[in-house]
Image (cartoon, rainbow, N blue to C red; front, side):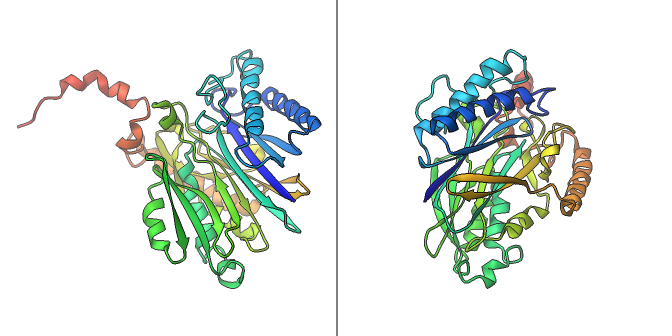
Length: 366
């Protein structure tokens, strides 16, 4: 059977600043999702949060970019904002809802979206990854390791169904154009592009041998929609596992290094992406460090079975320890680069308002 899994998220309010989503918001969303199951709109769901972002995970049979599914998510976010966030005076109530009226698709309206549609195999495991305090380009290095690095993914070498490699679709978020790179033949070309995470974002990955979808990532850049800093994008990612795709253990191995990502405090700093369990899905030190949660599901006859809290494992303690030590070191730089983002990225923060105060002070130097 053909099944769609949708992950749609938005920052619509949090408690104690940007720290976490309160239970009242989660309960509101769960009640609405139960109603949607009863009416047959969706088949199953899981509601959670990554830091201060409300995360809606649905399974259904309506395909990607479906107006009913997107409209339902929009109404959940709008209703939760009005009925919960504003009444409780939550911080940044409705922050990611950048448009007033729904237009058939939440893409370009603020919420982040990753959706994947496939014909179910005999067994279909997936990983859903959700990050807080970073941008969509943060997934670039992880998707490269999962689908292109044989030192991470042994199946690229020894699994005949993966040996031909994968195709990466990369989106230029500034120009709104995309290109496809075939790996391993165009590996160096791909790396030349995706190393610039602020502009080039891996949109999806497909198996080259049969064009089967393997992974889909959100690509929303809030600052490019709003023209100003309105919070970081906080991307989501869906990855299929096993039986011709990387094993779940190979997928998780990619997250064994806390790479530096852009975002963190005021969306203006680089910091290590720390994989944590749901228990620690909150941001504290300097509004961070940037957090990552991972949930594992089985997709069975259109239903989501699970989840498994993938990073709730002492095997990831060394990763968290290293991320903490990187945090300690990079924070020593304070307002200086390379902790603070470069000038191109800072254009979309509140820094230009500060610089404007003394713009006329500059005079030509001899």
